[in-house]
Image (tube, rainbow, N blue to C red; front, side, top):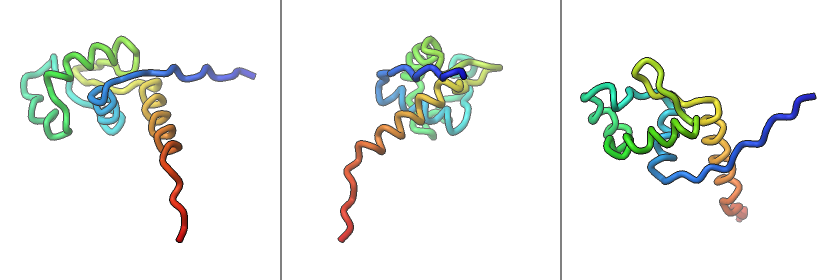
Length: 98
């Protein structure tokens, strides 16, 4: 039986987590491939200038990839995103019934 490798612990900035979450929801045009993406990034709550930096790091970590002028989340990026959501939900205090 093959045991899956544990997910790596990843420390990202809030902007990097936000970009990763946006890419889990839907792919984006690569900001380096077009000049018309500022409005699209702003509509999704992303800063285009910050994206240039974040895309490089997230690509290097293999959390996202560039494909045909699109930024897409990888399977690893999706897993890391959902693990963060799961862990943050565990930290919420339990609500006591009245």
